[in-house]
Length: 422
Image (cartoon, rainbow, N blue to C red; front, side, top):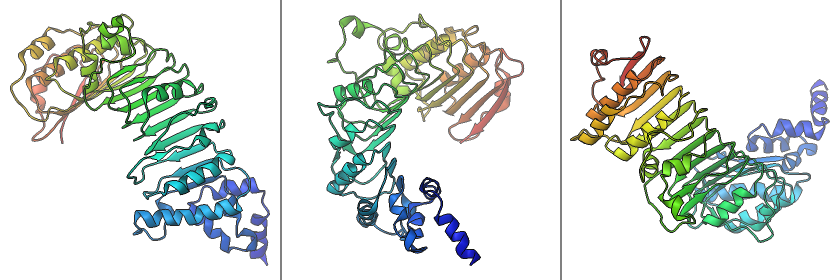
């Protein structure tokens, strides 16, 4: 009797309380509550959130087609018995969705007032055509798409509540992407990964705060983003595009000044070596006219110190960042060859004291102790009066002996050097 009474107390809780409890369980476990009693048989089908991930499958050896069949069994029950809104849908199980099934499910979600729609990685031969029905979901706050292609319908009024947008392996053209971003007035976070169909990227959004790009493009425009504080741009290869919507004056302007010069409010900046190379054409100023006064952390990934363009841009950014506190550099030069004398002479001629008065932490990873790498280490140590730690990770072999660092002049008496090897 006591056990039954306890069960009754749980069963008689308000639905919003039960929903809050059940959505924190894996969907497979939430569905198992159907065996508790007839009253619980279909409760799980009316959840406000449905997350399909690897925890949904009792048999972990199912192939990707069978996984989708299992998911569809759940979806069919939900479509039959669900009452109330559905706020979140997430597909994060590696499977092979049937496009017609997925399209019908998305129409069902659009009618249920979906707020968070997430398609993670799944298997596809051809991209899924994103249905127009979801473009009418004005209540969407979070949208992540994978493996699809879409165009904005003529009647699209924008996503008035969308705060986060992520596109991965999506096919989208230049104008569609630009208009989509522009019509999301409260968008705060934008992530673009391995996008197809773009020759350039144009991002204008007065509310955007966080931007991450990891894809190929010919050019990029970032004007009119006054609130951008965190930027991560990884360009896989340099592919300059000349047929772009910009004036002759804009095309002739230094890419570093044109692209980053309008982002003086950035606090965290992460750039790839290939993007530094892109920014290095044409002539690079020693420092930007408007400095990065709020920049606290700078990360440079897969940099080549054999490229004078990349080195020039890197030092120009340092000169323009008077309040920088953290600097991280990783290298893509994995073999020691003949060094380029102009790069060594260029590094020897630079003096950054006065530009790095707040730099406290430096991390340099993947070096081979080439002459340009060593000159950069010397330059940073000589120019950082409040440096606390410098960690240097050698790519292979024995670590750099500490005695070698003792021969280098340091602006900071308290700087600790940590020498490691991969």
